[in-house]
Length: 539
Image (cartoon, rainbow, N blue to C red; front, side, top):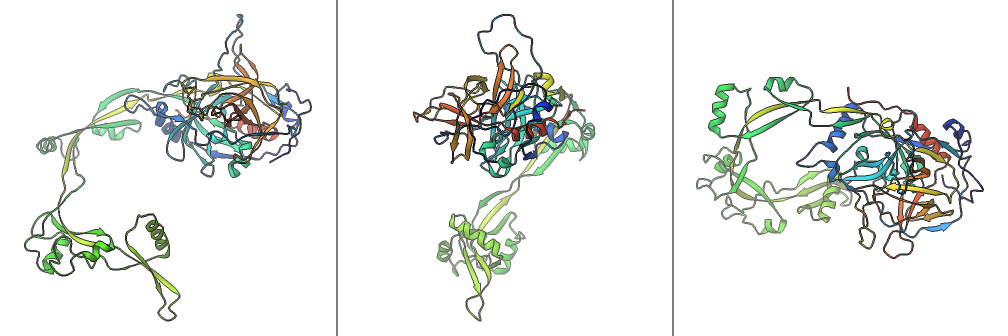
Protein backbone atom coordinates (compact mmCIF):
# COMPACT_ATOMS: atom_id res chain seq x y z
CA UNK A 1 0.00 0.00 0.00
CA UNK A 2 1.43 3.36 -1.03
CA UNK A 3 0.65 6.40 1.09
CA UNK A 4 1.45 10.11 1.05
CA UNK A 5 3.24 10.53 4.34
CA UNK A 6 3.15 13.77 6.32
CA UNK A 7 5.08 14.84 9.45
CA UNK A 8 4.68 12.41 12.33
CA UNK A 9 3.09 14.96 14.64
CA UNK A 10 4.46 13.79 17.94
CA UNK A 11 4.22 9.98 17.83
CA UNK A 12 6.34 8.59 20.69
CA UNK A 13 7.75 5.19 21.56
CA UNK A 14 5.03 3.22 23.31
CA UNK A 15 5.57 0.82 26.16
CA UNK A 16 3.89 -2.41 27.17
CA UNK A 17 3.25 -5.80 25.69
CA UNK A 18 2.51 -6.83 22.13
CA UNK A 19 -1.25 -6.92 22.67
CA UNK A 20 -1.27 -3.40 24.03
CA UNK A 21 0.77 -2.13 21.09
CA UNK A 22 -1.38 -3.84 18.45
CA UNK A 23 -4.52 -2.29 19.88
CA UNK A 24 -3.58 0.87 18.01
CA UNK A 25 -3.18 -0.69 14.56
CA UNK A 26 -6.84 -0.82 13.54
CA UNK A 27 -6.00 0.74 10.19
CA UNK A 28 -3.36 -1.89 9.38
CA UNK A 29 -4.19 -4.44 6.69
CA UNK A 30 -2.59 -7.88 7.25
CA UNK A 31 -1.24 -8.08 3.70
CA UNK A 32 1.18 -10.85 4.51
CA UNK A 33 2.50 -13.59 2.26
CA UNK A 34 4.70 -16.55 3.09
CA UNK A 35 7.02 -19.06 1.43
CA UNK A 36 8.24 -22.42 2.69
CA UNK A 37 12.03 -22.70 2.87
CA UNK A 38 12.92 -26.14 4.32
CA UNK A 39 9.68 -28.12 4.46
CA UNK A 40 10.63 -30.74 7.06
CA UNK A 41 13.40 -32.06 9.32
CA UNK A 42 15.25 -34.19 6.72
CA UNK A 43 15.29 -31.28 4.28
CA UNK A 44 16.53 -28.94 7.03
CA UNK A 45 19.39 -31.28 7.98
CA UNK A 46 20.44 -31.46 4.33
CA UNK A 47 20.48 -27.66 4.16
CA UNK A 48 22.61 -27.36 7.32
CA UNK A 49 25.06 -29.95 6.08
CA UNK A 50 25.26 -28.20 2.70
CA UNK A 51 26.78 -25.19 4.48
CA UNK A 52 28.84 -26.82 7.21
CA UNK A 53 30.22 -30.03 5.79
CA UNK A 54 33.90 -29.60 5.04
CA UNK A 55 34.82 -29.65 1.36
CA UNK A 56 38.58 -29.86 1.31
CA UNK A 57 39.85 -27.54 4.04
CA UNK A 58 36.79 -25.28 4.23
CA UNK A 59 32.99 -25.25 4.07
CA UNK A 60 30.42 -23.40 2.00
CA UNK A 61 29.88 -20.81 4.74
CA UNK A 62 33.43 -19.63 4.25
CA UNK A 63 33.06 -19.64 0.46
CA UNK A 64 29.99 -17.38 0.34
CA UNK A 65 30.27 -13.74 -0.68
CA UNK A 66 28.14 -10.69 0.09
CA UNK A 67 24.89 -10.49 -1.85
CA UNK A 68 25.29 -7.28 -3.83
CA UNK A 69 23.30 -8.00 -6.99
CA UNK A 70 20.39 -5.76 -5.95
CA UNK A 71 22.23 -3.39 -3.65
CA UNK A 72 24.49 -1.38 -5.90
CA UNK A 73 24.42 2.38 -5.51
CA UNK A 74 20.83 3.49 -5.89
CA UNK A 75 19.97 6.31 -8.23
CA UNK A 76 19.73 9.61 -6.36
CA UNK A 77 17.25 9.33 -3.51
CA UNK A 78 15.13 12.45 -3.45
CA UNK A 79 13.88 13.68 -0.08
CA UNK A 80 10.21 14.62 0.06
CA UNK A 81 7.49 15.08 2.65
CA UNK A 82 7.44 13.26 5.96
CA UNK A 83 5.69 10.42 7.73
CA UNK A 84 2.17 9.87 9.01
CA UNK A 85 1.90 6.55 10.90
CA UNK A 86 -1.13 4.41 10.03
CA UNK A 87 -2.02 3.91 13.69
CA UNK A 88 -0.71 4.27 17.20
CA UNK A 89 2.94 3.43 17.92
CA UNK A 90 3.63 0.02 19.42
CA UNK A 91 6.43 -1.99 20.90
CA UNK A 92 7.40 -5.56 21.78
CA UNK A 93 10.03 -5.94 24.49
CA UNK A 94 13.30 -7.76 23.75
CA UNK A 95 14.34 -11.06 25.34
CA UNK A 96 17.58 -12.36 26.78
CA UNK A 97 18.73 -9.20 28.54
CA UNK A 98 22.33 -9.35 29.66
CA UNK A 99 23.46 -8.08 33.04
CA UNK A 100 24.36 -4.43 33.23
CA UNK A 101 28.00 -3.61 33.71
CA UNK A 102 29.02 -1.33 36.55
CA UNK A 103 31.88 0.23 34.60
CA UNK A 104 31.22 3.05 32.18
CA UNK A 105 31.25 1.60 28.68
CA UNK A 106 33.44 3.50 26.23
CA UNK A 107 32.98 1.24 23.20
CA UNK A 108 29.86 -0.05 21.52
CA UNK A 109 29.07 -3.60 22.55
CA UNK A 110 27.89 -5.62 19.59
CA UNK A 111 24.65 -7.54 20.20
CA UNK A 112 24.78 -11.33 20.30
CA UNK A 113 21.64 -11.42 18.17
CA UNK A 114 23.21 -10.29 14.90
CA UNK A 115 24.68 -12.61 12.32
CA UNK A 116 24.60 -13.57 8.68
CA UNK A 117 21.93 -15.28 6.61
CA UNK A 118 23.36 -17.57 3.94
CA UNK A 119 21.58 -18.73 0.81
CA UNK A 120 22.01 -19.82 -2.80
CA UNK A 121 20.71 -17.14 -5.17
CA UNK A 122 18.95 -17.56 -8.51
CA UNK A 123 22.31 -17.71 -10.30
CA UNK A 124 23.43 -20.64 -8.12
CA UNK A 125 26.00 -18.56 -6.22
CA UNK A 126 26.69 -18.82 -2.48
CA UNK A 127 25.69 -15.51 -0.88
CA UNK A 128 25.04 -13.85 2.48
CA UNK A 129 23.27 -10.84 4.01
CA UNK A 130 23.03 -9.43 7.53
CA UNK A 131 20.19 -10.15 9.98
CA UNK A 132 19.19 -10.37 13.65
CA UNK A 133 17.30 -12.59 16.03
CA UNK A 134 14.08 -10.89 17.10
CA UNK A 135 11.56 -11.53 19.88
CA UNK A 136 8.82 -14.11 19.17
CA UNK A 137 6.53 -16.50 21.03
CA UNK A 138 8.70 -19.55 20.30
CA UNK A 139 12.04 -17.68 20.24
CA UNK A 140 12.63 -18.73 16.65
CA UNK A 141 12.40 -15.60 14.50
CA UNK A 142 14.91 -13.72 12.30
CA UNK A 143 14.45 -10.23 10.84
CA UNK A 144 16.21 -9.26 7.61
CA UNK A 145 15.61 -7.54 4.27
CA UNK A 146 13.05 -8.99 1.86
CA UNK A 147 15.64 -9.19 -0.92
CA UNK A 148 17.73 -11.45 1.34
CA UNK A 149 14.91 -14.01 1.21
CA UNK A 150 13.36 -13.52 -2.23
CA UNK A 151 15.34 -12.64 -5.33
CA UNK A 152 13.44 -9.59 -6.58
CA UNK A 153 15.40 -9.71 -9.83
CA UNK A 154 13.89 -13.12 -10.58
CA UNK A 155 10.19 -12.50 -9.87
CA UNK A 156 10.70 -12.90 -6.13
CA UNK A 157 11.83 -16.52 -6.39
CA UNK A 158 12.77 -17.82 -2.95
CA UNK A 159 16.46 -18.25 -2.18
CA UNK A 160 17.63 -21.85 -1.74
CA UNK A 161 19.32 -23.40 1.30
CA UNK A 162 18.51 -20.46 3.60
CA UNK A 163 20.13 -20.44 7.06
CA UNK A 164 20.88 -17.92 9.82
CA UNK A 165 24.19 -18.06 11.69
CA UNK A 166 24.38 -15.68 14.69
CA UNK A 167 27.88 -14.60 15.66
CA UNK A 168 29.29 -15.98 12.40
CA UNK A 169 33.07 -15.71 12.02
CA UNK A 170 35.25 -17.25 9.30
CA UNK A 171 33.30 -20.43 8.69
CA UNK A 172 32.40 -20.95 12.36
CA UNK A 173 28.91 -21.08 13.86
CA UNK A 174 29.43 -20.65 17.64
CA UNK A 175 25.71 -20.87 18.50
CA UNK A 176 24.74 -23.27 15.75
CA UNK A 177 23.15 -23.09 12.31
CA UNK A 178 19.44 -22.19 12.16
CA UNK A 179 17.68 -23.41 9.02
CA UNK A 180 14.82 -21.29 7.72
CA UNK A 181 11.38 -22.90 7.80
CA UNK A 182 8.93 -20.20 6.65
CA UNK A 183 9.53 -16.67 5.39
CA UNK A 184 6.84 -14.01 5.92
CA UNK A 185 6.88 -10.93 3.71
CA UNK A 186 4.48 -8.19 2.67
CA UNK A 187 2.22 -9.15 -0.24
CA UNK A 188 3.32 -6.07 -2.18
CA UNK A 189 6.96 -7.14 -1.96
CA UNK A 190 6.25 -10.77 -2.80
CA UNK A 191 4.10 -9.95 -5.83
CA UNK A 192 5.23 -6.53 -7.04
CA UNK A 193 8.84 -6.34 -5.76
CA UNK A 194 7.83 -3.20 -3.88
CA UNK A 195 11.02 -2.05 -2.12
CA UNK A 196 8.94 0.04 0.31
CA UNK A 197 8.15 -3.35 1.85
CA UNK A 198 11.69 -4.72 1.69
CA UNK A 199 11.62 -6.66 4.97
CA UNK A 200 11.10 -10.28 5.99
CA UNK A 201 10.52 -12.25 9.18
CA UNK A 202 11.73 -15.84 8.97
CA UNK A 203 10.91 -18.65 11.38
CA UNK A 204 13.85 -20.99 11.93
CA UNK A 205 14.15 -24.50 13.29
CA UNK A 206 16.16 -25.17 16.43
CA UNK A 207 19.82 -24.67 15.72
CA UNK A 208 22.08 -27.61 15.07
CA UNK A 209 25.77 -28.24 15.40
CA UNK A 210 27.15 -30.34 12.57
CA UNK A 211 30.36 -32.12 13.39
CA UNK A 212 32.51 -34.99 12.25
CA UNK A 213 30.89 -37.46 14.66
CA UNK A 214 32.24 -40.96 15.24
CA UNK A 215 33.34 -42.66 12.02
CA UNK A 216 33.54 -46.45 11.88
CA UNK A 217 34.64 -48.77 9.07
CA UNK A 218 32.09 -51.56 8.56
CA UNK A 219 31.26 -54.47 6.28
CA UNK A 220 29.19 -53.87 3.16
CA UNK A 221 26.19 -55.62 4.74
CA UNK A 222 26.34 -53.29 7.78
CA UNK A 223 26.73 -50.28 5.51
CA UNK A 224 23.66 -51.24 3.49
CA UNK A 225 21.48 -51.58 6.61
CA UNK A 226 22.63 -48.32 8.21
CA UNK A 227 20.17 -45.43 7.59
CA UNK A 228 22.26 -42.52 8.91
CA UNK A 229 25.21 -40.68 7.44
CA UNK A 230 27.61 -42.98 5.57
CA UNK A 231 30.12 -42.89 2.76
CA UNK A 232 32.31 -45.07 0.56
CA UNK A 233 36.01 -44.68 -0.22
CA UNK A 234 37.12 -46.06 -3.59
CA UNK A 235 40.61 -47.25 -4.50
CA UNK A 236 41.47 -47.96 -8.16
CA UNK A 237 42.98 -51.40 -8.79
CA UNK A 238 44.17 -53.51 -11.72
CA UNK A 239 42.10 -56.16 -13.50
CA UNK A 240 44.20 -58.90 -11.91
CA UNK A 241 43.47 -57.50 -8.43
CA UNK A 242 39.79 -57.25 -9.31
CA UNK A 243 39.65 -60.85 -10.55
CA UNK A 244 41.39 -62.07 -7.37
CA UNK A 245 38.96 -60.05 -5.21
CA UNK A 246 35.89 -61.47 -6.94
CA UNK A 247 37.21 -64.99 -6.43
CA UNK A 248 37.70 -64.27 -2.70
CA UNK A 249 34.55 -62.24 -1.92
CA UNK A 250 32.13 -63.04 -4.76
CA UNK A 251 30.30 -60.67 -7.11
CA UNK A 252 28.51 -58.95 -4.19
CA UNK A 253 31.71 -58.10 -2.36
CA UNK A 254 33.63 -54.78 -2.26
CA UNK A 255 35.38 -55.38 -5.62
CA UNK A 256 33.63 -53.46 -8.38
CA UNK A 257 33.97 -52.75 -12.10
CA UNK A 258 32.13 -50.80 -14.77
CA UNK A 259 32.53 -49.61 -18.33
CA UNK A 260 33.46 -45.95 -18.49
CA UNK A 261 33.20 -43.29 -21.21
CA UNK A 262 33.99 -44.70 -24.69
CA UNK A 263 37.18 -43.57 -26.38
CA UNK A 264 36.57 -42.60 -30.03
CA UNK A 265 39.33 -42.16 -32.64
CA UNK A 266 39.04 -41.46 -36.39
CA UNK A 267 40.39 -44.29 -38.60
CA UNK A 268 40.71 -45.04 -42.31
CA UNK A 269 37.91 -46.77 -44.18
CA UNK A 270 38.19 -50.58 -43.83
CA UNK A 271 39.40 -52.24 -47.02
CA UNK A 272 36.28 -54.45 -47.31
CA UNK A 273 33.80 -51.53 -47.02
CA UNK A 274 33.17 -51.32 -50.75
CA UNK A 275 29.53 -52.40 -50.96
CA UNK A 276 26.40 -51.08 -49.31
CA UNK A 277 25.74 -54.46 -47.71
CA UNK A 278 29.09 -54.51 -45.92
CA UNK A 279 28.84 -50.83 -44.94
CA UNK A 280 25.41 -51.44 -43.38
CA UNK A 281 27.03 -54.04 -41.09
CA UNK A 282 29.59 -51.48 -39.98
CA UNK A 283 26.86 -48.94 -39.30
CA UNK A 284 25.16 -51.49 -37.02
CA UNK A 285 28.43 -52.38 -35.33
CA UNK A 286 28.46 -55.85 -36.89
CA UNK A 287 31.43 -55.41 -39.16
CA UNK A 288 34.26 -57.97 -39.26
CA UNK A 289 36.79 -55.45 -37.86
CA UNK A 290 36.02 -55.26 -34.13
CA UNK A 291 35.45 -51.78 -32.74
CA UNK A 292 35.32 -50.01 -36.13
CA UNK A 293 32.05 -48.31 -37.06
CA UNK A 294 30.63 -45.83 -39.57
CA UNK A 295 28.92 -42.83 -37.96
CA UNK A 296 27.52 -39.51 -39.13
CA UNK A 297 29.40 -36.33 -38.23
CA UNK A 298 27.25 -33.18 -38.38
CA UNK A 299 28.49 -30.35 -40.63
CA UNK A 300 27.11 -27.13 -42.08
CA UNK A 301 25.12 -27.16 -45.34
CA UNK A 302 28.06 -25.60 -47.18
CA UNK A 303 30.41 -28.35 -45.97
CA UNK A 304 27.84 -30.99 -46.88
CA UNK A 305 27.36 -29.59 -50.41
CA UNK A 306 31.12 -29.59 -50.92
CA UNK A 307 31.49 -33.21 -49.75
CA UNK A 308 31.80 -36.16 -52.13
CA UNK A 309 28.47 -37.48 -53.46
CA UNK A 310 29.56 -40.47 -55.57
CA UNK A 311 33.30 -40.90 -55.71
CA UNK A 312 34.55 -42.92 -52.74
CA UNK A 313 31.01 -42.73 -51.40
CA UNK A 314 31.87 -44.92 -48.42
CA UNK A 315 34.99 -43.01 -47.40
CA UNK A 316 35.58 -40.45 -44.68
CA UNK A 317 33.90 -37.15 -45.56
CA UNK A 318 31.41 -38.51 -48.08
CA UNK A 319 27.81 -37.26 -47.90
CA UNK A 320 25.59 -39.27 -45.53
CA UNK A 321 22.45 -38.74 -47.59
CA UNK A 322 20.05 -40.83 -45.52
CA UNK A 323 20.82 -38.99 -42.26
CA UNK A 324 20.67 -35.59 -43.96
CA UNK A 325 17.10 -35.84 -45.25
CA UNK A 326 14.45 -33.33 -44.00
CA UNK A 327 12.55 -34.43 -40.88
CA UNK A 328 9.03 -33.32 -39.84
CA UNK A 329 8.93 -31.43 -36.52
CA UNK A 330 6.34 -29.67 -34.36
CA UNK A 331 5.69 -25.94 -34.47
CA UNK A 332 7.12 -25.64 -30.92
CA UNK A 333 10.39 -27.31 -31.95
CA UNK A 334 10.48 -25.17 -35.10
CA UNK A 335 10.20 -21.96 -33.04
CA UNK A 336 12.89 -23.10 -30.60
CA UNK A 337 15.32 -24.08 -33.35
CA UNK A 338 14.62 -20.82 -35.17
CA UNK A 339 15.69 -18.98 -32.00
CA UNK A 340 18.75 -21.24 -31.64
CA UNK A 341 19.70 -20.55 -35.24
CA UNK A 342 19.60 -16.83 -34.56
CA UNK A 343 21.96 -17.41 -31.63
CA UNK A 344 24.32 -19.53 -33.73
CA UNK A 345 23.40 -22.74 -31.89
CA UNK A 346 21.81 -24.57 -34.85
CA UNK A 347 23.50 -25.04 -38.26
CA UNK A 348 20.71 -26.84 -40.07
CA UNK A 349 17.91 -25.62 -42.35
CA UNK A 350 14.36 -24.95 -41.21
CA UNK A 351 11.37 -24.81 -43.53
CA UNK A 352 7.62 -24.30 -43.45
CA UNK A 353 5.46 -26.71 -45.42
CA UNK A 354 2.60 -24.97 -47.22
CA UNK A 355 -0.69 -26.40 -48.47
CA UNK A 356 -0.12 -27.44 -52.11
CA UNK A 357 -3.63 -26.25 -53.00
CA UNK A 358 -3.47 -22.58 -51.94
CA UNK A 359 0.33 -22.28 -51.71
CA UNK A 360 -0.10 -20.07 -48.62
CA UNK A 361 -1.43 -21.96 -45.60
CA UNK A 362 1.33 -23.44 -43.45
CA UNK A 363 0.51 -27.06 -42.63
CA UNK A 364 3.80 -28.28 -41.20
CA UNK A 365 7.44 -27.67 -40.40
CA UNK A 366 10.72 -29.49 -41.13
CA UNK A 367 14.32 -29.41 -40.07
CA UNK A 368 17.28 -30.59 -42.06
CA UNK A 369 20.68 -31.27 -40.54
CA UNK A 370 23.66 -32.33 -42.59
CA UNK A 371 26.04 -35.21 -41.97
CA UNK A 372 29.12 -36.69 -43.62
CA UNK A 373 30.41 -40.20 -43.12
CA UNK A 374 33.13 -40.79 -40.59
CA UNK A 375 34.89 -44.05 -39.76
CA UNK A 376 35.85 -44.36 -36.12
CA UNK A 377 37.38 -46.88 -33.77
CA UNK A 378 35.43 -47.18 -30.52
CA UNK A 379 36.97 -48.75 -27.43
CA UNK A 380 35.19 -48.94 -24.07
CA UNK A 381 37.67 -49.06 -21.17
CA UNK A 382 36.74 -50.69 -17.89
CA UNK A 383 37.40 -49.22 -14.44
CA UNK A 384 38.20 -51.56 -11.56
CA UNK A 385 38.11 -50.55 -7.89
CA UNK A 386 37.68 -51.83 -4.34
CA UNK A 387 35.37 -50.10 -1.84
CA UNK A 388 35.80 -49.40 1.87
CA UNK A 389 32.61 -48.67 3.82
CA UNK A 390 32.17 -46.15 6.64
CA UNK A 391 29.24 -45.06 8.81
CA UNK A 392 29.08 -41.81 10.81
CA UNK A 393 27.23 -41.68 14.13
CA UNK A 394 26.41 -38.58 16.19
CA UNK A 395 26.80 -36.30 13.16
CA UNK A 396 24.11 -33.75 14.09
CA UNK A 397 23.41 -32.27 17.54
CA UNK A 398 20.50 -30.05 18.57
CA UNK A 399 21.65 -26.55 19.62
CA UNK A 400 18.31 -25.37 21.04
CA UNK A 401 16.12 -22.39 20.21
CA UNK A 402 17.62 -19.25 18.70
CA UNK A 403 16.20 -16.87 21.30
CA UNK A 404 17.35 -19.04 24.19
CA UNK A 405 20.92 -18.98 22.86
CA UNK A 406 21.42 -15.38 21.76
CA UNK A 407 18.29 -13.54 22.90
CA UNK A 408 16.05 -11.51 20.63
CA UNK A 409 15.76 -7.81 19.88
CA UNK A 410 12.49 -6.04 20.54
CA UNK A 411 10.24 -4.75 17.78
CA UNK A 412 8.58 -1.37 17.30
CA UNK A 413 6.46 0.36 14.68
CA UNK A 414 4.73 3.63 13.82
CA UNK A 415 7.52 5.54 15.51
CA UNK A 416 8.49 9.11 14.82
CA UNK A 417 11.45 9.75 12.55
CA UNK A 418 14.43 11.84 13.55
CA UNK A 419 15.37 9.57 16.41
CA UNK A 420 18.75 8.00 17.12
CA UNK A 421 19.24 4.43 15.92
CA UNK A 422 22.16 2.02 15.95
CA UNK A 423 22.55 -0.03 12.77
CA UNK A 424 24.51 -3.27 12.74
CA UNK A 425 25.66 -5.43 9.86
CA UNK A 426 28.54 -6.94 7.90
CA UNK A 427 29.47 -4.35 5.22
CA UNK A 428 31.76 -5.92 2.66
CA UNK A 429 31.44 -4.54 -0.87
CA UNK A 430 33.65 -1.69 -2.10
CA UNK A 431 32.36 1.83 -2.62
CA UNK A 432 31.36 2.76 -6.19
CA UNK A 433 34.85 4.19 -6.76
CA UNK A 434 36.44 0.86 -5.84
CA UNK A 435 37.64 1.81 -2.35
CA UNK A 436 37.15 -1.17 -0.03
CA UNK A 437 36.66 0.15 3.48
CA UNK A 438 35.18 -3.04 4.98
CA UNK A 439 35.96 -6.75 4.79
CA UNK A 440 32.65 -8.31 5.85
CA UNK A 441 34.55 -10.59 8.22
CA UNK A 442 33.32 -8.99 11.46
CA UNK A 443 30.13 -7.03 12.25
CA UNK A 444 30.27 -3.24 12.30
CA UNK A 445 28.01 -0.52 13.63
CA UNK A 446 26.92 2.94 12.61
CA UNK A 447 24.54 5.32 14.30
CA UNK A 448 22.84 8.65 14.04
CA UNK A 449 19.51 10.42 13.82
CA UNK A 450 17.23 9.27 11.01
CA UNK A 451 15.88 11.77 8.52
CA UNK A 452 12.45 13.33 8.96
CA UNK A 453 11.95 13.12 5.19
CA UNK A 454 10.95 10.20 3.02
CA UNK A 455 13.32 9.07 0.28
CA UNK A 456 11.99 8.44 -3.19
CA UNK A 457 13.56 6.55 -6.12
CA UNK A 458 11.43 5.47 -9.07
CA UNK A 459 14.20 3.19 -10.34
CA UNK A 460 14.19 1.28 -7.06
CA UNK A 461 10.38 1.34 -6.62
CA UNK A 462 10.83 3.42 -3.47
CA UNK A 463 8.40 6.09 -2.34
CA UNK A 464 8.70 6.10 1.44
CA UNK A 465 12.06 4.95 2.78
CA UNK A 466 13.68 6.80 5.63
CA UNK A 467 17.41 7.37 5.64
CA UNK A 468 20.51 7.57 7.80
CA UNK A 469 23.86 9.12 6.93
CA UNK A 470 26.35 6.25 6.86
CA UNK A 471 29.32 4.91 4.91
CA UNK A 472 28.07 1.30 5.18
CA UNK A 473 28.39 -0.70 1.96
CA UNK A 474 26.44 -3.72 0.62
CA UNK A 475 26.76 -6.80 2.76
CA UNK A 476 25.19 -4.80 5.60
CA UNK A 477 21.80 -5.07 3.89
CA UNK A 478 19.25 -6.85 6.07
CA UNK A 479 20.99 -5.63 9.24
CA UNK A 480 18.77 -4.24 12.02
CA UNK A 481 18.08 -0.58 12.81
CA UNK A 482 17.75 -0.55 16.61
CA UNK A 483 15.98 2.25 18.44
CA UNK A 484 16.58 2.80 22.16
CA UNK A 485 19.68 0.59 22.00
CA UNK A 486 21.16 -0.19 25.40
CA UNK A 487 24.91 -0.60 25.13
CA UNK A 488 24.99 -2.31 28.54
CA UNK A 489 22.22 -4.80 27.73
CA UNK A 490 23.10 -5.04 24.01
CA UNK A 491 19.40 -4.85 23.24
CA UNK A 492 17.04 -2.45 21.54
CA UNK A 493 13.99 -2.40 19.27
CA UNK A 494 14.08 -3.27 15.57
CA UNK A 495 12.62 -0.27 13.79
CA UNK A 496 13.96 -0.96 10.29
CA UNK A 497 16.36 -3.06 8.20
CA UNK A 498 18.97 -1.84 5.75
CA UNK A 499 17.61 -1.92 2.20
CA UNK A 500 19.38 0.55 -0.10
CA UNK A 501 22.77 2.26 -0.28
CA UNK A 502 23.07 5.68 -1.86
CA UNK A 503 25.75 8.07 -3.05
CA UNK A 504 23.96 11.38 -2.62
CA UNK A 505 26.81 13.75 -3.47
CA UNK A 506 28.01 11.52 -6.37
CA UNK A 507 31.63 11.40 -5.21
CA UNK A 508 31.95 7.64 -5.62
CA UNK A 509 31.36 6.84 -1.92
CA UNK A 510 28.23 5.53 -0.25
CA UNK A 511 26.96 8.17 2.16
CA UNK A 512 23.41 7.08 3.01
CA UNK A 513 21.54 3.88 3.86
CA UNK A 514 17.77 3.55 3.83
CA UNK A 515 15.11 1.34 5.38
CA UNK A 516 11.41 0.76 4.82
CA UNK A 517 9.24 2.56 7.37
CA UNK A 518 7.82 0.06 9.89
CA UNK A 519 4.10 0.76 10.24
CA UNK A 520 0.98 -1.15 11.26
CA UNK A 521 1.14 -3.38 8.21
CA UNK A 522 4.69 -4.35 9.15
CA UNK A 523 3.44 -5.10 12.67
CA UNK A 524 0.69 -7.35 11.29
CA UNK A 525 3.21 -9.39 9.30
CA UNK A 526 5.61 -9.58 12.24
CA UNK A 527 2.76 -10.70 14.53
CA UNK A 528 1.81 -13.47 12.11
CA UNK A 529 5.38 -14.77 11.94
CA UNK A 530 6.05 -14.36 15.66
CA UNK A 531 3.30 -16.82 16.58
CA UNK A 532 4.45 -19.70 14.32
CA UNK A 533 6.15 -22.74 15.85
CA UNK A 534 9.02 -24.52 14.12
CA UNK A 535 10.64 -27.01 16.54
CA UNK A 536 13.68 -29.26 16.43
CA UNK A 537 15.00 -31.16 13.43
CA UNK A 538 17.11 -33.61 15.42
CA UNK A 539 15.54 -36.63 17.13
